[in-house]
Image (cartoon, rainbow, N blue to C red; front, side, top):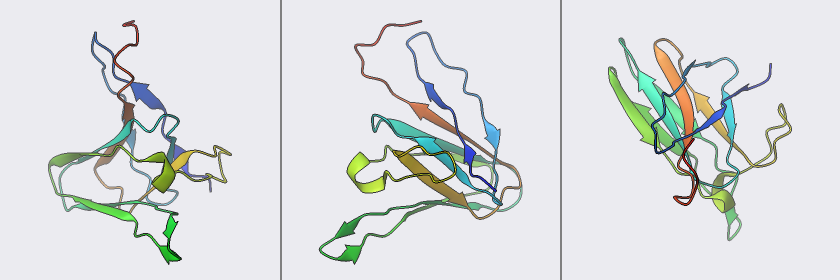
Length: 126
C-alpha cells in the first residue's frame, strides 16, 4: 500500500492548531519538503517507545550516508528536522512527489505525527 502522506502545515504568527494523524507502521509516511523548512512532530503516548527513521538517500565519496534514527520515548514528543534538501529529499514513488522525505516508524500504537513548516519570516499572517 501507499505511504500515508502528511499534509505540511504552516506555522503562522496568529498561531497554528496542529492537526495530527495516527502513526501508520504498515505503510509508513512521507511529506513534501519543498523549501527544506519542514519539521516532523512525533508524539508517543502510553506504552513503549517508537523508533522513527528518516531515509537518507545520499551518497558521499561512494559511501551511503546513514539514515536519521530518532527514538521517541513513552509519554514524550520530539520535533525532528529540518531536513536539508540535498541530503534527504527523494521521490515518493507512491505519491509521485519528487522532493519527499520518507519516514518509517517501527510501531504505531499510541503514536501521532504531523509535518509543520516554519515559513520565511517575511510571510503574511492569515
